[in-house]
Length: 489
Image 1 (cartoon, rainbow, N blue to C red):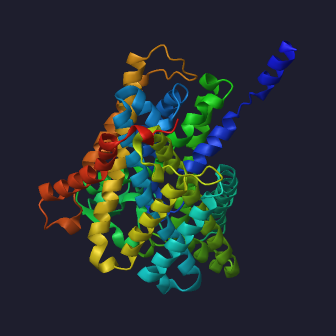
Image 2 (image 1 turned 60 degrees about the vertical axis):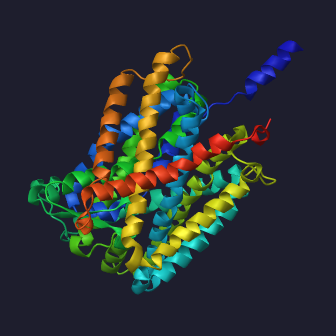
Image 3 (image 1 turned 30 degrees about the horizontal axis):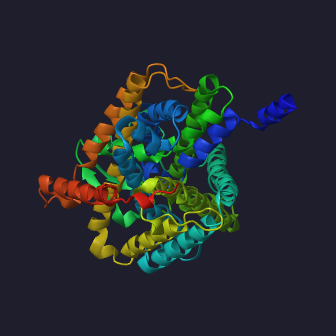
């Protein structure tokens, strides 16, 4: 009987395939909403995507894979093991705040796409954008309240229909366009592989998280190209969220590198070929930074006399944006709940519904997103403030990666005997490369754009640093005033 029982227990252990891990990484990272910003550089966009992939994305994926197969808890658990509970709490808090700021950005893309389908002027209407963001986000929140199974099912299909399919359509349309002998709106010469901003030392627009186009800022001179590359780092952010599942592979040491390699290839293919397709039909000087994708579809389908297909693709793009939001709605907030139950949050923020979902944290999150979304209504008055807020959010995420790389180095030294399903060869090299790239990104993130030319550089940096201190203070306050009865046993 004991043997039968052991057999049954053994059968309960199931593994996921490395293909599944790869697809999860792609779903967490890949998005086509930011492609128009790179499409204005035509062939030069290849370099703008590949450099961040090599110096940032790959190191993050590899290092997170070792950490994920050694310790539970994601970024919180890794930093906690290396530097203690207080800094672990700080890092997961920063991640949550950063994502809250990101939501109005991606839903601003959905609003612009929806507007372009019916009335182009609505794309620049702050009230319309604000209303759409609020409606979509609260709908996403209510859906998230139904639990992880519901979220995972919707996210899977939303990503497939709203990201993979539209990206493939763009590539196919671009190929057909060229095969039919149509001219390209972008320079297709070999020299164009070097982005024009490097060749001409001109002006470039950058936007942390690729916000609504009115919130983008200009950088000029020789520094502009480097700012552009660094701004693309966060286009690859999020892979660490799924690297923690590496422990569920049957043989992580052999299968995880395969998953990462496939994920990198797929993500680069989702980024680069569709970007080039947009540049074929939408001139750089008329590309909308938020509605550029639907602009490209309209140009293609109008040329092929099938304009009625454009709204269909527009709906798919909106589905993709909702999928991205839904996939992130519950993740960081669930990590916050995990930390809260260890005694860091008062009971009111630990409350869960009948589905085990952190309902009060989600409601608080939705209220904050609603408040941030009203910035679109006052676009002429608060664009600079919104830029500063988004720049702070980008710096938050980069600081989180600093802690991740440092934790990996420390844990390899202090806890060498902890069993890791995946052991990264050359860990210190990859951490060093990732740290160097991340620090460089932070430095460039502190450079004020041209619109702040009247503000002293030190004042600009001081405001950003003060904002980081202010937004980073709550976890330390909660930690200081925590009570024993807050912990859930």
